[in-house]
Amino acid sequence: MRFHTKGGKKQFCHNSHQKDYANHTIASKSLIDQLEQKGLTWKGYFEDIPSPGSVAVVAPSLNRVLYASKHNGFMNFKKVQDDPNLSSKIVGLDQLTTDLKSGKVPNYSHIIFNQCHEMHGLQECSNLKQLIQTGDATIGQFVNKITSSKLWAASGNNAIIITWDEDSNPRDKAEIQGCCGFDPRSKANFGGGHIATIVITNHGSRGVADNTPYNHYSLLRTTEDAFGIYEYLNFAGDTAKGVKPMTPLFANKKVAKS
Image 1 (cartoon, rainbow, N blue to C red):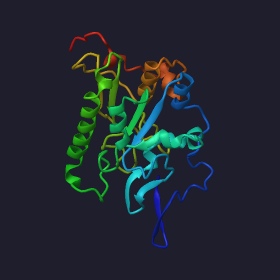
Image 2 (cartoon, rainbow, N blue to C red):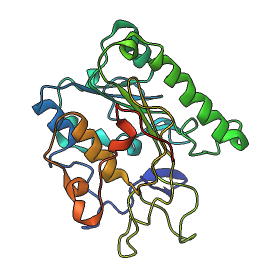
Image 3 (tube, helix red, strand yellow):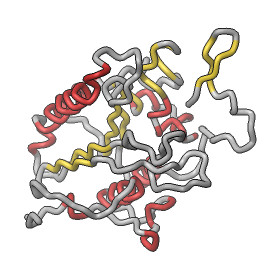
Image 4 (tube, one colour):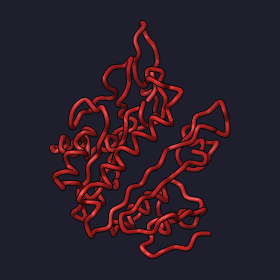
């Protein structure tokens, strides 16, 4: 989502009239559809979303954007936009604490912090120089909440995946980055760089380091595999081009360290 200024006021999407502008109401199949077809539940937890089910673009204001719908991928899908039960599926981050205590945690949870806590580094954020430390502390707080819950101690397999969309070192300093690969012909896909991804499992191996090249299509494929979904969406099934499931990071058997 981009701003431009008109009459001294910030406005959104000044290129939205163009034919090739990105469509933010997508009717194609998504992971949400796949989960629901399997009878599984899902929920998105978003820090500083104005209210459950909110369709706001940003919040609390254009001058202080903590919540941004551009980081809420669910809202790009028409099925989610039209869902009459949206307010029970797109909720505030505080709801996660409540759900963990009650044991009513969905099968798939998507957790997004606000733009100060996710290390984006808005000028409005306090302690901008300590952005990474603040982000690490926020992540640690919620990892502790999850791993201290009854859900985590139960016999079922659960996992926390912590990842980023890009690093801070684009190949072309004049351009932005995308999440997956590098395509100089693309207006959005400038390569995400080398990002950290951490997997924590309640019954899996410990201290596993995997040097296999993965990207976010690998993560989508791994998520589908974990829920017994083998109809891979988009490039998630493109094994011929190197998309691989992140199986070693979820192994239940002890993996020897290299």
